[in-house]
Length: 253
Image (tube, rainbow, N blue to C red; front, top):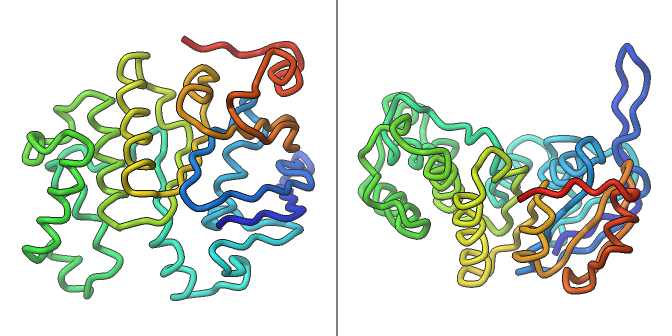
């Protein structure tokens, strides 16, 4: 379970202080799939990035599966992050190497330095990487160079890399924003299947309202750093969307 209680986050810089999150409280149960929607700059990315402490919170408490996240340091923080997969819009792959080598990087944090340096992986690790690729439907691309894949296929490689680390939670920050509508649907199908079959909790920060309503059982609407809606996707109507988008909804195909 993810418990976020009265969390605020501010960023300070030469242009002043930005309140990215303002007194946010949400609870996410194990196995949920949540779509986080709102305008660009509303605080969606900041919200999910506090969960694995890519951003430290300024106020409030953050607990994941009974662990006070802000109390973690050093190797305990690294071990915690291993249980949380992160998917980005930009894929974050090494494009000049093969697909399977990209997936195998999921094991690098747990390897002795010499194995990580020389890229030495066990048969078991290689099998796990292949199984992860099979789960997202691109096992046949395992030994293809990553830069020869389409954007949707590269995002599936990133998802397979995350699955290889056996996460309890997947955080996805605009995972389909750079994809065409057909490919975006395919990637969202992967998230949906993984959530249902593997019981992995999934939080997706997503710009496409229609996809959020279709795939997420729960929608969290963020506006100017505040959660203005948190409930079933089936209950999201035009009045809710107007509240989130202030009557200026960003509709995406």
